[in-house]
Each structure stands twice: as structure tokens, then as C-alpha cells.
Image: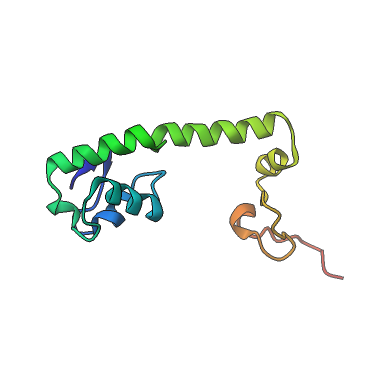
Length: 122
């Protein structure tokens, strides 16, 4: 199992899919990275040589914000919204949908399981 930037990427997946296991690298970015380095996208991750893995790692490290630094940056952005008490920050604080979704009948992912209220029906 090859390691790129501290992340174990799966052996049996194509190279472009294996790169998406790195936080901050999606399908579009992985295709772009492999094209810029001149590597075949459909090659399995186990068949990529160690020097090519090193090239991929240095390219990603130089040109993209990934993994721990990106996670920290996202958390700092959310904390900033909470501190300035803007609408989005309040929604984060209350655990409700942030991007304008309705909450009357959906939003179970953000609100959690239903809490049944006694005596509501009349």
C-alpha cells in the first residue's frame, strides 16, 4: 500500500482514484496532477514506481493545500464565522443546515435523530 503525504492509498485502484483518498484532492485535481506529470491515469497504484510516487508527492505538496493544513484552515474559517456571530456562524453553532436548506421536514443529518415530543397532537 503506497503512502503519499502520510495517507495510505489503495493498491488495486487506478491511480486517479487512489489520489482522491488524499483530503483536498478530488477527481478533477487527480486527473490534472497525473496529466501534468505525464503519468497514465488508468495505471494501478501498485504499478507506479517509487520515484513517480515521490514526484506526485512533491507536486501535490508544492501546488495544493491538502490534509492537516487544509482541515485546520476549514476549522479556523468555521470558528471565525462563529466568533463574528454572522448568520452562517449561528447555524454552525446550533447544528442546523448552513446553506439555506429547509428544516421543517428534512435536515436529519444536521439535526440528528427525531426527538419525539409528548402531548403535541390535539
